[in-house]
Length: 124
Image (cartoon, rainbow, N blue to C red):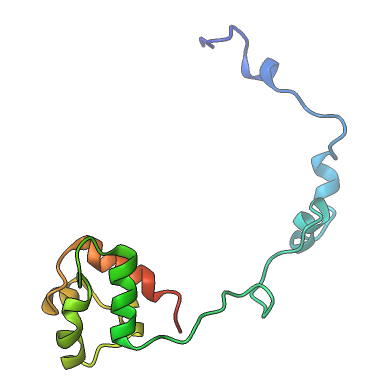
């Protein structure tokens, strides 16, 4: 078989003698094998490392924030306020609305949808 370096795979392998051989790892119970090799602890959600979400603002304030942050023209997001209120949409709903539901609200641009979803993620 042709190898670009001219050597066979066995010749390319290098084993660090300072590493434990695989037979010593089989003596360690499976859940602890990885822990014994690494000094860091696994990360689980705790009050100290969890993302803290802010209470959601009113819909009109949220849309104004989106206008300021993402808008390329005045009231780019605020133009939907009346329709969103008519359908009882809240800031939290943007996270789960489907593309079809956004379209039924007149929100048809992919960028608008992505921005509204992204901006809503910071709120409870």
